[in-house]
Length: 338
Image (cartoon, rainbow, N blue to C red; front, side, top):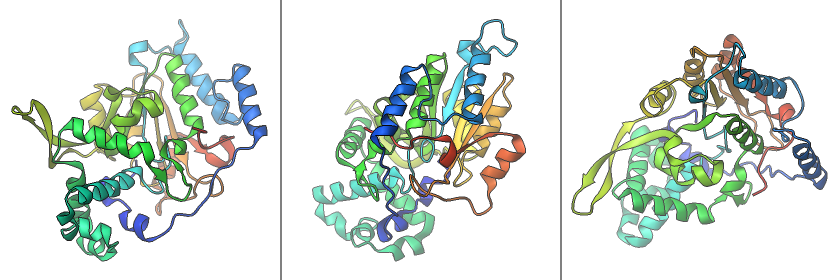
């Protein structure tokens, strides 16, 4: 996630429509994907080409006993950003959840509708967020993500995902996952890699769906976190309206050290806000052979096309010789079916 979750494009989501670009997978494409899988292809939704070959060659060389590039199983750590890397980020799902929480909280306590930031969201008052800047957005996230126990928050996240539809594509949120990336996660795990999500989004939101969406357990999610306190009366952990760790950009290597304790040998992020550069550089400093992968959003037909104004991520990829996913050319299929 290449962006501060507190510099969310909340206004853009609420006041401008997303470009509709539904992905339609033909029966022929489905048959080709199934046939490739049946023929032993570990990455059937990836087009045959240099990148796919490089991924497979890397995995084979570092997992082959006796190879000079062999990496012990305990050191096969792979980290993936989430927004824009494992699922779409136009708009961010975190934003959708914040607005969902506003609606539910106002339903429970109607008087909140007259208080900010709830009033601004309900009335679609973009000036509140424009004038308030980061402070107003932090206020919204804090108001909708804190003041409850972890069990209560997780229940709210689960309720959201049961019915949430992704704007512009009108599909359940689960269907904005990238099919090629799901295959890559499975391929790495089949070869002894431990896969982690390292996201700028709040850790608890992603933990609630990581196992179901990606096959990644809660304890393998690293993200932005709030401060907590133990409520002895309730025998529960309560979240407070204050940040503990902001897990984006230079915060990602710190989060990795805090939660994992070692550098990843495989790291994957995306171009869009320069949020994954530090993680990929950190991975490249590993004592073992490493692999860095950056997703380039250049497919306006099947997904979206956007880039950083300063081209920082792609420039870093070129300078450091990272691998770049050309979404148009490297992926046969973009989104998961279900």
